[in-house]
Length: 179
Image (cartoon, rainbow, N blue to C red; front, top):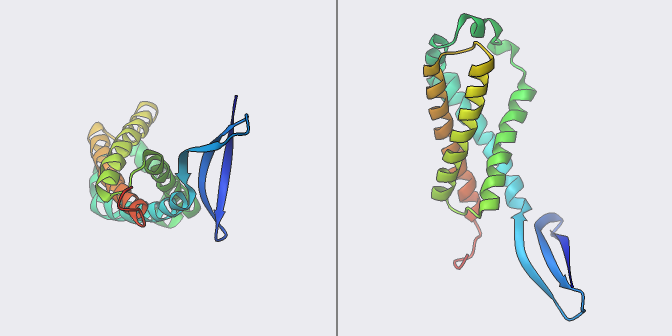
């Protein structure tokens, strides 16, 4: 008979790894099965990823694609857009952090420990998230044309790939040569 328990380790005051341990109830031994996630890397990756996503979003959508997106936004979409001075900054910041934590979670759970693998996984996540959000918005709101959707998804893939590369690189720091 076996018992599955979850353990949270604490190292130097910081939360370490969450892992589960399989205990043999016959009292003979216990065996570590698998590390679920390194919480420190998840938290650092999420925060750094959120900051990178915010900065890249400002450059890509706020500067490079701003006039293109305005040209492909409908009159109804332009009517509901906030002016730069009316931005709800707390929502923008939390939204970027949420995307950073989403990528950090996926990359940590996938065991990604390199910039290249992080970029590939980040691009895939960005592709599917972008397609879902843009098509939901297109289906329910008259905000933009299909050209804007394609460009927005592609821009999201590039930004998510870069953020994924950063998080993947962070995850690999301190990794042993064998792992």
